[in-house]
Amino acid sequence: MVQQLIRCWVSFIAIMPLVSAFSSYSIRYSRSTASRSLALFAKNASTKTKLAKSNGQNANTGGLRRLPVVKAPKELMDKAKKSARIIAADTSVKNARNRARKHGAETINALSQALCIPLRDLVKGYKREWRQLHPFERVVADLTARSRQKQDGLTISIVLDDIHEARKEILASGKDWISKVKSAETAREADDVTQEGQDSLLELYDVLAAPAVSGILGVQRSLRSAPVVRLDTPAVVLVGAPNVGKSSIVREISSATPEVNNYPFTTRGMTLGHVEVFWSDNEAIAKAVVPSADRKQGQKAMDVTIGKYAFSQLCQVMDSPGLLVRPDDERNEMESLTLAAMQHLPTAVMYVMDLSGGAGDKCSSVADQLQLRKEVRARFPRRPWIDVVSKYDLGVVDGALEDLEDILDGTPYIKLSIHDGTGVEELRSEVLKMLGGVRIVLDAMAAVDTRSARKE
Image (cartoon, rainbow, N blue to C red):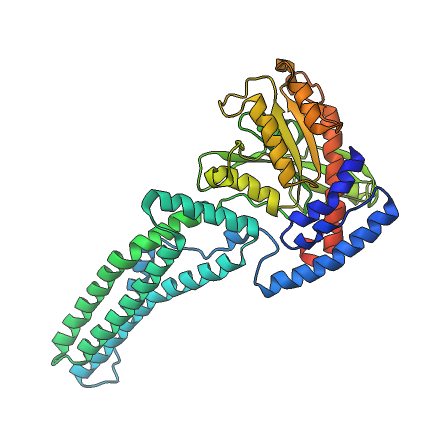
């Protein structure tokens, strides 16, 4: 299995958006050949990184949390009204009518600008960050937009256009009211027009801009809370049909209380756990432990500080939404997310099957799970990969193991039972081997792109 995983390293690189050109290479099971190949990968990665930079694409996740902060419409309106109230009349203007005209024009202009500048910054900021999103986060954003469109027919693009148009209307109206103030015949009329103009601008904002801003605010809260998968940290993603035990495996082999985050377009969560891996040198894994709840990424472990180990990393172990056997154009948002994670994130794969016949979904029969395994493996043929038969204590449908072994064609698999502990240690060992392989690739990437560098 180790040899198979090493041969998979090259295709693993191919799935990363910055290094997709590597898929034609292969790493052999020898240190010298692997070193030469990784050096070649690094060279190609440098070229691909420059191309990504020229396209304005972000090589790291976290862009969804960098989206401009959107304040509630009422808060924006209150702040704008405060900006208008602090405009003082120019006492150097002795003529009362001219003084009122000037004060009114400045007051309306201050209100108009205070209402419109946040709208302008919101639209520009969203469009800028949207273009620069990492490919995986772009999928998350697109799926969120697709879900919203199903609800009310709106998309992010439409909402941003609505905000832009509202801003133009408010600015134009502000100019009209300034003109009216300047044309007032008396000071009293100037004051009345000033108040009328302020009321009109606020009403216009409330009718045209507030609904769109509220819509963006709701989407933003969801997007900014979406899970962030680190690209500089080795990761294993669990893939399979629904209800096959992926989350239980994550909890067993990683953090005792992993994060459960909901994506914006579903009430289903993604479980993200961590395991701290210690290396005795750049190639040999010494041990792995489940980190404490307060252990943070980038915090140096005590055993590393005292020199017992060369370094350690908090590696990621995550489940993914269940896949069904069906064409891509029929998949829901969660299935699309799983495929996007495999395509765009630097992860090895653990394919999980429940062959007991009790997966709990009419679309997750043993035959469907085996067919799904063939289809997904064919789609990602060289990705670092292990196969796991979960819930083994519940038994196996007659003939299921034989059918699986025909598909695997001699490739080993793990029989696992979280309930009685069968295969747990073997699984942990194989996961560590895959994480070690992924780390080698990421370190090769870091040699040419400091943004991918390991955080110690």
